[in-house]
Length: 130
Length: 130
DNA sequence: CCGTATCCCGCATGATACTG
DNA sequence: CAGTATCATGCGGGATACGG
Image (cartoon, rainbow over all chains, first blue to last red; front, side, top):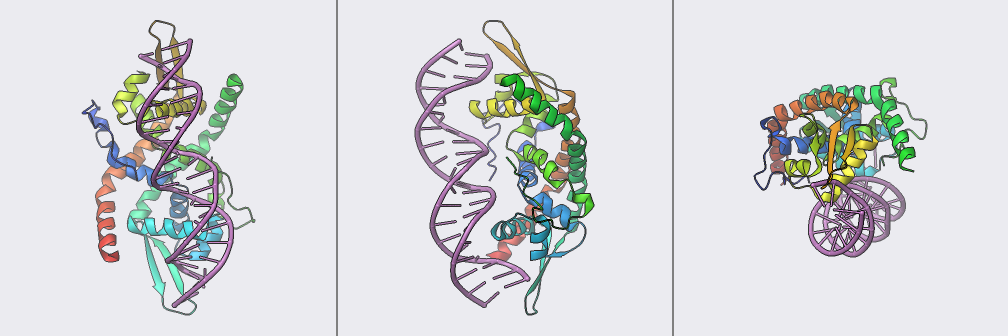
């Protein structure tokens, strides 16, 4: 997905930035439209498929499946099938997924605290440009 | 870009999740391929256009321009043109951009600390699936 | 040196319909 | 209820060429 194409020519990175490529893979996950939303939502406890669907609102069945599969693959969530009828499938955060909530929360807090400034900057920029 | 289409039907969100839509706009920025990389890079001080280009490595001229414009619009970076010949343009972080580095650092730290676990989980998942 | 303008392609996402 | 399958599409992003 995010192909590691940085520094192909042996460019000069600050050592502190050396692992950017690896980090970018995670950042991509954080940036995608639904993953973070679902991780935060599952922080309150396990949820069923359609329960998540309703709570998120606006996500297609397909994308929910894909997103949950991705998170499961990354070791962020577990998928538990109860062989009842009708079927019951529960998704829950793993410890790894739980631990991700902390830095994501921090980012969310920052966003809430600064969204006004960003909006203002955008309006100012747009009027200056127009 | 990220259209606020959550909760259109008056669904039930935990109050703590109430501002997800707004936050998502910021998260999208964090998730895009180059923005965060550039913000972190500019943390070490102002840089010129092609200087950034070389340091990032693998970014097209087009995408660098677009990314920098976006960051400028969001109030994250300033663009300063020195009317010399040849032209010299410097990009620097604003205080707002500086403040973003903290939560992003946290996320980066988390990523570095857990990337092994993620990789392991992926391999395990893939072998289990195959 | 620092861009802008075009063209083009692939993937991410959505809509819809079907299944166990 | 919890998916899978298929089709359509918009946009992110690269390549290239040109301009001040």
